[in-house]
Amino acid sequence: MFMIRKKKRIRYQLQGLGTRAWKRMLEMFEVGPCDDDYQLGFLIGQRFCDQIRSRMAGDLILQHQLLPFARTPQGQALIKALSETNQKKFPRYWAELLGMADGGGVPVLDIILINFRKEILPFISNTAMNSNTDAIDDCSDVLTVSDLMALAAHNEDANVALVGHTYLIKGKLSNGLSFMAYTYAGELPSCAFGFNNHGLAFTLNSVPPTEGEIVPAGIGRNFVSRDLLEATSIADALARIHSSEVSVGHSYNLIDVRRRVILNVETASRSRVSVHEVGATPFFHANMYLHLQVQQVHDENSISRQKRAAVLPQGSKTDFLSLLGDTEDAKYPIYMTGPTLYTLCTAVIDLDEKTLTIVEGNPKKGKVSHVFSMSSKDLN
Image 1: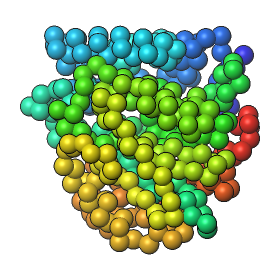
Image 2 (image 1 turned 45 degrees about the vertical axis):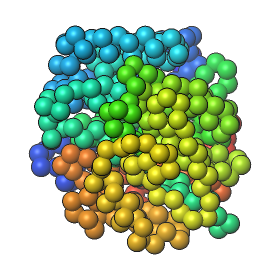
Image 3 (image 1 turned 180 degrees about the vertical axis):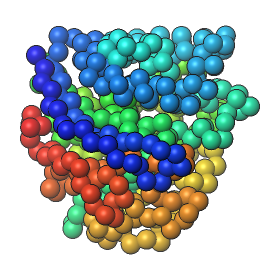
């Protein structure tokens, strides 16, 4: 059996877009326990079929880059290898992905492509890349664990195609595990942030290794983060990260609300992992490697955000929200309003209050849309 919680939908004009665009209220779907993983994916796809189809139709990266590449011999070989590798490592999540495609009534190939977009795009010729659509996502985090407070504050930044195409999944598994995940339409929960009833939470930051640092057909980052939702402890989460032979690197902010611990974990291909324990000195992470020694692409956007954060106050929760809402740098603001990248929301995890708060709009203004207790074993 499964439960559905419906929220009233509202639409409003999204400020900052050059063209008329609309955004739905962030909705939550309670699902599970299910008979199997395919059914879990199918029910999610069925519930959010409108958002999934709309995202697919309007996603220029999918339409102009990924799908054309998938028709080439090189693309077909890479997609086949990625699919086989990840299905073998994570058969349950692969079944969930297939169920989502069937439930949403969209081609399986489209679902595969958007879930592997970060693993595929580096192999598409630069001549095929459009400067208006090649920005996939960026995120900013500021973290601290001191005697006075323990916080993880996260801006979820993404391409314009994701505006109005996200939702919350509250999943319950037959083994008693429950999770809450902020989810992109058509993707596995969660390539953004989430937490479970073991008191384990995470936020994510993309990082830009150079092409030579990337191993084709490794484990996809969406599958690793889906696996983290089922981690029973921060040690288990680290073990799951270590055991995945990833194709492209990532940065994970692992949060243990029960032990009051935050770890920033940077990864790269060939089993390279670096762990930094966050302490009293606030730690800001944008989209560049900070402590794992990896050849990386020069990202002026990330570097500018990193420099700006270094001069802003970081002594309180209010300071954290003000920092994440900063727009002083018109070209590379921390809080993004287009035309290509948008801050979809801000997540604030308070380890002392044991809450996850989602703020929509500029976090300086504090428009809270959801507050979740992280202390309840059943996430009620």
